[in-house]
Image 1 (cartoon, rainbow, N blue to C red):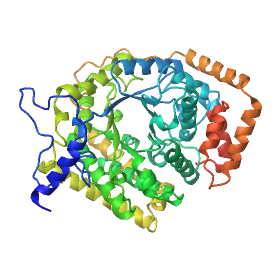
Image 2: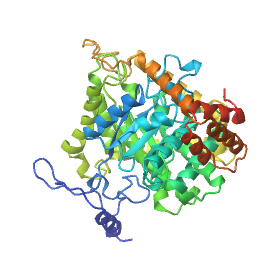
Image 3: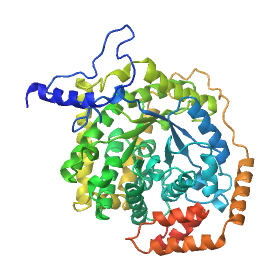
Image 4: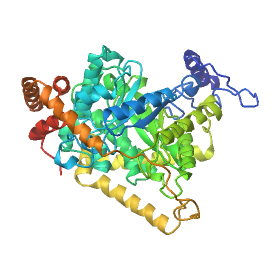
Amino acid sequence: MTDGGRRAEWRAAYEHEPLRDAAFETMSGVPVAPVYGPDDAEFPGEYPYTRGPYASMYRSKLWTMRQFAGFGTAEDTNERFRRLLAAGGSGLSTAFDMPTLLARDSDHPLAVGEVGRAGVAVDSLADMEVLFDGIDLGAVSTSMTINSAAATVLAMYVVVGDKTGVERRRLSGTIQNDILKEYQAQKEYVFPPRPSLRLVTDTIRFCTSELPRWHPVSISGYHIREAGSTAAQELAFTLANGFAYVEAVRASGLAVDEFAPRLSFFFNAHIDFFEEIAKYRAARRIWARWMRDRYGAADPRSWRLRFHTQTAGVSLTAQQPEVNIARVALEALAGVLGGTQSLHTDSFDEALALPTEKAARLALRTQQVIAHETGVVNVADPLGGSWFVEALTDELEREAEEVFAYLDELGAGSMLDGVIVGIEEGWFQDRIADSAYDFQRKLQARQWTLVGVNDFTDGDDAAPPTLSIDPSVETRQLARLRAVKANRSEVAVRDALARIAKDATDPLVNLVPALIEASAAYVTVGEVTDTLESEFGTYT
């Protein structure tokens, strides 16, 4: 290929992508090119996508500004959703309360005091209908951060779409549905790993067939990092989980190019600015190479790693909380310079409570300042070619490959088996705990400065006004749950649960259609869990 060949190929792809109506120039009026670098170098939108998954990147489309929201009852969160959309948000991201995350109903004995506290309470289709009341599911992209109950909650969302006349092929969004990282980091699991993997696989198969615009799993490094991992561990463990899902779905009978284009990822944006940018670039390069060379993907869409980013909740401090505004802005900028497709910015008060509406709006405005005032969206991969960034990208890739080699050997040539064995033997959990301990030692020895915590502590630690969840939330939620159970057809509930129990015994049957039938009959999340638990067992 001639020196101009790679640039010519990039130019053809770039010109094929419609551009935003914007002036691509500096504040002083200096025109800027869409990309910089030598003619024979790698370009954005070109394998292995180190420089970004698309040729034009943000010149064509900004990232989705998807603010995380969820608290109280469905009515409370629906109101917050509407206000975020009115403030310029371009996607919804749903946080669920702890009982829902653990696939239990609000009337479960362990739910007392937790209903609606850390997110919105969803027990049945009745809650999901209220949660998205007045919101066109065909016009908005929705993300739902849930794992153990992911298949059940997605089934409810599908039924809401069906009942409001939105064709399934128009439903757009993501459900996290990444159960492997739960065993490694977040611990919100119910069933053992292999039957839990079956639910993930069934969801991917169903979405491949019925929901072509839906991302059926968001392979998540975010919670791995929040638990204390290093950036290299977040990168390696996340991609290893992705490879495990690929192997599981291929074993179910789907060809890799049938489902891989809709796999998505979710990374943390921590405070070490350049390390985070290098992490994203290394992730794209590794995924592209493994998908093409190891798993035989032929469709370039299967090679492209697309990801959502959230700023690091664990970096927020209760001390001098306004300083968190600066942390979040820098972390968000790293996500953008690393080429994210979607972004959530934490609110500065989240070390103290769920965010107030004012704090959530300020977090969204932070993204809008980056998008519309800084000029960083005018050039694809503006840090590409930096000696430091390129060297750091290579080093993170090298460290990740060492992890893959270990897991591959542990699984006797199967990344899926290697990940499962690593979970069962506690290998992932031990590595994360060791890294968390090492960082805490650095903080205590003041080898790492945390402003307002171990240095520069002479600031204002007064807590800002915080969001308070009214205790009546639990009373109102329990009343709705009782009303749902009193007014539904018990025959339909019994039949739906019997179908779930029957389908669960046959690994060749996809469970999602049975879950949709159950959702339409107003079967609760907890009832589905109890039924599956009787077949799958409980993981301890």
